[in-house]
Image 1 (cartoon, rainbow, N blue to C red):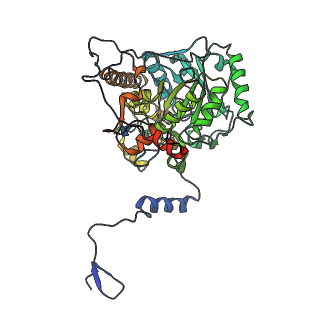
Image 2: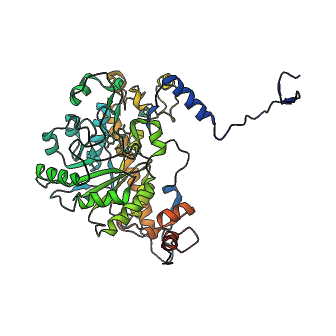
Image 3: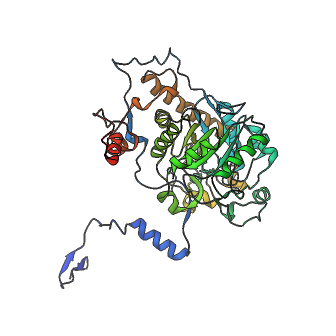
Length: 461
Ligand SMILES: Cc1cc2nc3c(=O)[nH]c(=O)nc-3n(C[C@H](O)[C@H](O)[C@H](O)COP(=O)(O)O)c2cc1C
Ligand code: SF4
């Protein structure tokens, strides 16, 4: 028999296939995954975000700018306002952003000192806010950031009432889109002596942060927490509440009724410095769907516009921000996009990417502490690769470019303020997006979501 042939089970040689045929169930990724877990003996942990090939999202929407029936604005002559005030419900001193974009909470521990300071410096130059994270406030970050949002997390690692009082806003973290219903993970490689001291935990040992706030047994405790934080900060600063997009209608109503100023909605697309691999791809719902549910929930209880929404998770460009605003968000947070502007996944130090078994462009190794470009590491040598001043300037350039993109879209839609973008400016490109958002499918003029709701109720309304 020809040695290149394989046995067909009937003693006949069959020519080998030139093109390998992969099973859809047992794909090469699944086979590799099982083999890795068979060696490890536990679940896989990694950084970055979901690796799903497709999720319903903002790419399924398109703008329908002005033409004859509506007048566009002139880019070079007519103003298009981007200023955004967050916390106008109760806070005496709301956060004022020059553009509806802010830097999300990323812990000092997951990120290096240089990355934290570069993000703070960039935020100050841009006139936007940045946020602390699990592990508390880094003094150098406070110094670099004019507007700093202080996270209150279940772990309380590094929690300091003095830091709380020095904050410009407080964010109660209930959950994250990347890993809702679970706590944080910081692998021992990143727990340097300094990080361990801040968190009051032993160095070099894996840290798993708790998922539940220690003093909560139910949603009513959020009301008490908000009151405590208002008193501790003398009603001066906004109180945010961050949730993953899971049970959005209930959670948004509970948080709004508990008296927060701002709800941060963190979608399924959101990243993490380290998480069990399965959570990225199999928990939460896409940001677009969560945002629509949040807007409807606030409308239901008459608090739309009073309680503000920050959309987070997978925000990549000014167009994404424009779509989030059109769907009802007041601002967006960026995490991964800011890290990429810092240098994440940049083709530098190739040998170090290869040592981690990855290529730039497909690196998800934030959890290892061996970040080749000095962003998610506590190794002094690697960290030096991120030059603070130049890194901050790249983030400034990127956010400025995003703002210009946002204004291009708003002006084209005839809006003198980016916050005037609305669902009517959009059309859906897929049936899925039309059903999720209620925005008419391109080429139609009816709201599929309303029709299906009517059918489900059986009243045809
Ligand atoms: C390196 C890293 C560290 C993070 N640390 C925290 C944290 O300490 N607390 C928190 O609430 N979220 C944390 N997050 C999640 C972000 O706040 C945010 O929800 C997410 O990055 C948004 O998605 P995006 O990265 O696609 O913009 C972290 C994310 C990254 C990438
Ligand atoms: S380059 Fe650094 S920050 Fe980016 S994915 Fe890799 S390890 Fe994470």
